[in-house]
Length: 141
Image 1 (spheres, rainbow, N blue to C red):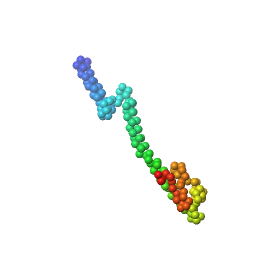
Image 2 (cartoon, rainbow, N blue to C red):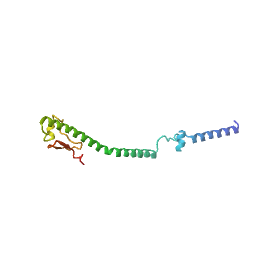
Image 3 (cartoon, one colour):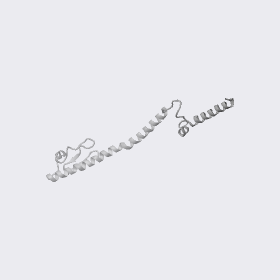
Image 4 (cartoon, rainbow, N blue to C red):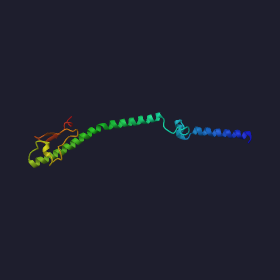
């Protein structure tokens, strides 16, 4: 093999290697972020990348928690209002059957209510036997 052809071959191979090195294994993504994705055993994520993902997830979780924190109190208030309406119906039925309001909510059990009612916060409902009104201490706050 003549010396000129051999030198030409080496130069062509060097150009091909440089072109492949510049292009990288990842194509456009590797060029965009300036790193090679293949070769030299760098298949995993760096610590900085993992920390960045954890921080982003933490921020999103924090936003979700603050958005839904007040919703539990709203749900309890709505449940108490629905329960008061149910108890009021039971009190009205008792009054129709007996001609007077019950002296306590315990008289409504078991015929009109399954069990003695407690509000969503675990307290007893406030019952006025004089006019049959029912209220909840947390709803008046």
